[in-house]
Every structure is written in structure tokens, then in C-alpha cells.
Length: 190
Image 1 (tube, one colour):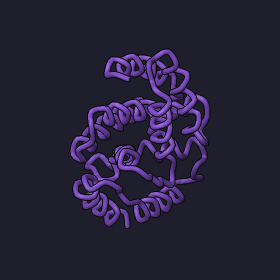
Image 2 (spheres, rainbow, N blue to C red):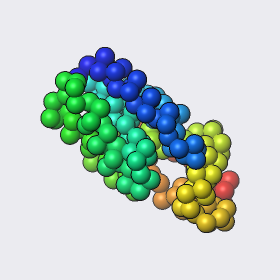
Image 3 (cartoon, rainbow, N blue to C red):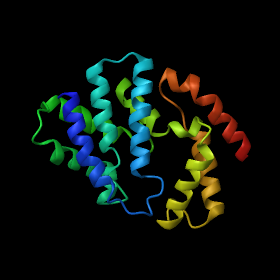
């Protein structure tokens, strides 16, 4: 597994993600790009190895590709798509398992068991503690309304408040940088 493997997979995955349903206003190619970027940023701050960063980038690349096939349980489909698209590349069994475990760690409610899983989970929900929270949250509201995850804006607001109240960042990096801003957003929504 090398950086060039990531580049090959990125080209394949991005081409696939271009075919996502336009009603996936939050779970989009842009979200995937953001999760890759935040995974690298957090991983570097947490001091993980270059190989581990590469595994994180690959998992972030595929963590939402399952939306191409299904809305519910998309993580499992994302694992299948990763295995299919990476079959011709030189991934060891251990690397394949690690990438799949990282993808599955992003399933809500998040329950990461390793530092790498904590990193991808924090990267996936990084926006909760950023200044673009309300802009990105609006894309999720639109998506949830379209897919009938919530029936109306009132239900969305209750869900959003409850999610923020119960969410916890896992890495030291995100707890330091994102948690205080997330708490400000929560207070604003109360």
C-alpha cells in the first residue's frame, strides 16, 4: 500500500461519488474531501505514522461511498466498494481489515476502539465544532427532510440539539480545538 495506491483509489472513488444522488446534500463528495483533510490534520497532531495516515485517508475516501447503493447501513456497502475497487492493488489482509474497521467506526453512534478510529470519527463530525457548522448543518437538514429521516423542521431541531448534547469528540486534538466551539453552537440552539 502506497501513496500512489491512494491516488488511484481517489480517482476511482471521486468518479463514483460524482454519481451520488443530488439529494445527498450533506453526504457529498465535498464531505468526503473534508473528512480526508480533517483526518490528516488530526492524525498529524496526534502523532501517528505515515502509513497510518495513508490508511485513514483511504478509509475516509470510502467511508460514505455506500450511499451509492443504500442510505441505511451505508458503511457496510462502503466496505464492499473499498474491497472491490482496491482488489487489484497491493493491500495486505491486515490493511484491508484496518480500512474496513475505520469505515465501520464512523457508524452512528460512534464507538471507536483505537486511536485511528477515534481520528476518523472526529474528522467525520469535525464541522460540529467549526464556524461553518450552521451552513453544513443546513445541508444535513435538507437531506434528512428529503429522505424522511425527520418529518419536519421541529423534529430536525430536536434531533440536532440532542445530537450535540450527546456527542463527544474522542481525540485530544479535537477536544481542545473543536469542543469549545461546539458548546457555543449548542448554547446558541438552546
